[in-house]
Length: 139
Image: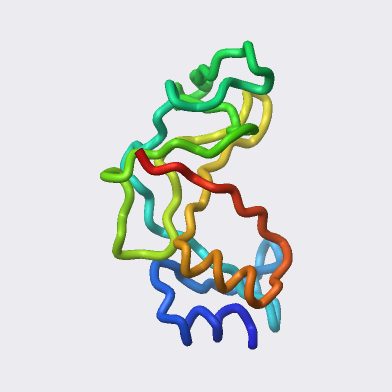
């Protein structure tokens, strides 16, 4: 069973399927390839004061503003669970992105994609590859 069939059978919500396009001018869909798009963004949810330090135990967990746009870039959470405020998350979808951007200056920042327990169970049950699941702690 492919991923999209499994999502449909399980009633997974909160994603869109787009074609993967190739070519700079024609932008033709690549046959047999599709990408999942997560259109939903949670409200600000990260609780920085509850993150278990930075890269090292004595390093504080402090965001840095992007010099180009001013967006706060949070370091990736490398130890422990990511503390998120429960009331900031959507409960009507199985996929959503964090409002916060994670990364370091000089790299390409990204929002983390949050998945429901149902999606995580499907991933484990089917033995799919290519994802890295991290636990979150709801506060």
